[in-house]
Length: 125
Figure 1 (tube, rainbow, N blue to C red):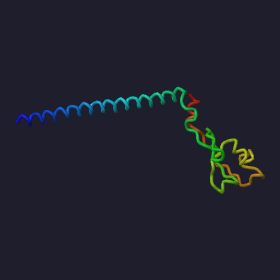
Figure 2: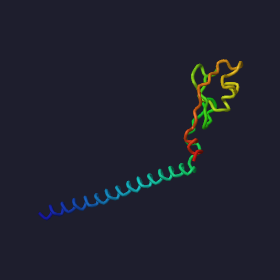
Figure 3: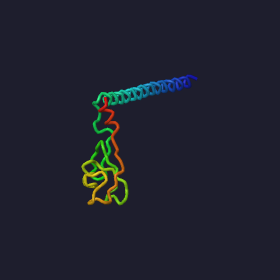
Figure 4: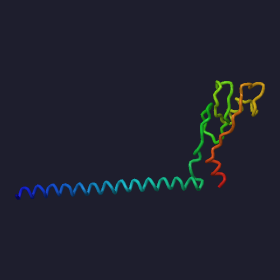
């Protein structure tokens, strides 16, 4: 009988240690979630105050790969009939610097502009 009570006490003591480690793990996860939430809030605050990432929302030019806030959608000689998004610098070469193209760029077709709205919101504030 005495050995049975010792075994049950040992099992109980072992589960108490397991409970403590479980509580510590829960507290650690909670602290990590709280720290991650604070970091997200700090990032949003920086964006709102104009101290955020200046490249947020930019897209790359299909020709040179540079990330910009304004792209021109167009078709041109080298695009094989597909619509491409090009930056202002590359657009001058594809269109001849004219919205509807010119005699030297007969395959050029203008298809509109893409603007980084995140950038426009920052400037409006």
